[in-house]
Image (cartoon, rainbow, N blue to C red):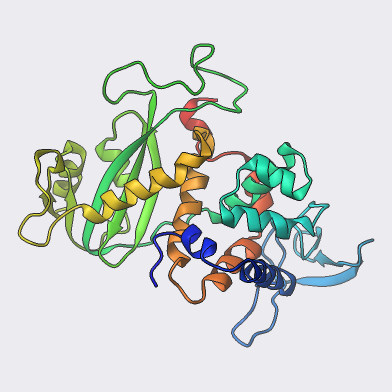
Length: 332
């Protein structure tokens, strides 16, 4: 059976199987995922990526400590991983169960008996493991479209919008800087990308930021009649087909359409709706979470893929500490 999203797959399982899924993920966690071609575990320094390390005693909780001969720093296998500094490691299983089930922050906090703030931190540490999950290249027929989300400054210390309007809808007609643009790309092979671009209307530069270096094998670009797509395809000498769905046009020459990317747009909105307005500075993290579930939803190795991505990331804590990637859009 082909599931429309990962939540459908997870909710279709029996309660016993759901818990087995989470247990399998954490078995991957315990084993570690830095494995070479021979199946041997690889230890490298999380600070400088040097393999010149040596064992250096154990921590109070019996975890192996290491010393890097290159940067002279100490670390453990947990350093900068998603579970680093997590005191209630056993509750992470319950939390992962809730995250895969689509629980809200508050519901997950109640289920795990943690504070709402801790629930927020755990979620975003997990989400920051999914940076750079968009397709590395596209081929054949590429569909591209833009969608817009209201700007939300929830959680920002410096508010640039008038008081009381952090989450309010724009009072301006059409597309304005009260909305943030997301560029969605899908090719016929299933490669997808979602990129938070800029406030207001997109430009040719916005499209270039998304597609440059990924279109060597692209033959045709399908889009609406936005001038930015026409300018970019003309500059890069790409064949461009325009489809005006608002005028009732669905397909041209029996093969060119934007139905795949429009379907992706709809499912993104359905995915985001239960979040009740994601802060713009965290929007890219949620889009990445959507993409990773899209990648694994119909793959028989979905558990290994998800576990590998989450638990092998040596930059989860570093990314989380660095702050939200889209903060610059708001000027805060």
